[in-house]
Image (cartoon, helix red, strand yellow):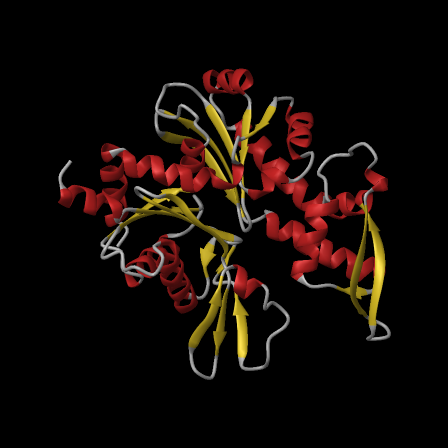
Length: 347
């Protein structure tokens, strides 16, 4: 391989542009960035102050002239300018401040987004400096990243539970036989905790606190010694308006998340109902694969197995499945050309 070829390859980028986190793969370097999809902006000067983890630390702690924004909601761009600046800054960080030139980018997107939303992602990537942009649907990327043989004539089922969307898909011969994308995922689980604490304990807590509760106490299925899991939580009491602390238990957190969890299970069941018999047989043998941050929720695999009767496995590295899938695409010239061509027809 010549010098020019190596230089060109080094500029290829794969991005998992998630509602909760953004992950970036750079050819020749591997996964170089995993940061919260958050940006802090100084409104008076119209400049970014921080992105990622540094911006997340500012949530709820900023003066009036500074806002902390999540440019993506439910898996799609809702604030184009903030998203563009955030992507640019992440790419700069990913390459340690050295300009990447005009790279090719492969970006994972939810399967249920509209053409308008697709164009917004493409425009943001181009404004961030991409020479060519390819969009790959997250279930396909997640399945590739999880090592599923989706190019073969066999049925594979992937459930990618992200921050803003849950993607459920049946895959075979490199295509989606049937898929669903619902805008119920990690954010809704976090919001259900916020609303529960407000309704039952008359206390207001922030998103960061609710996220910590979810990580430490939450489970999708009853687990041993669940009631022994406790956490002291501080917030603002609704009636007195003063700071207050309460103790929460694991069991009550599981119960308060039952509605969004039921919606995720229903999407899985609905997808199975639309599966051709031959592929359904393959899935019974191979099981359901879980990817995304939601796969780390304690007991989620047991819940899905119990509700569907199909053994459910968590991918080896669920958080990185989508970005690893973009890496596989960038390494496969036939697949890469196909995705770049399909994306070019969107605009």
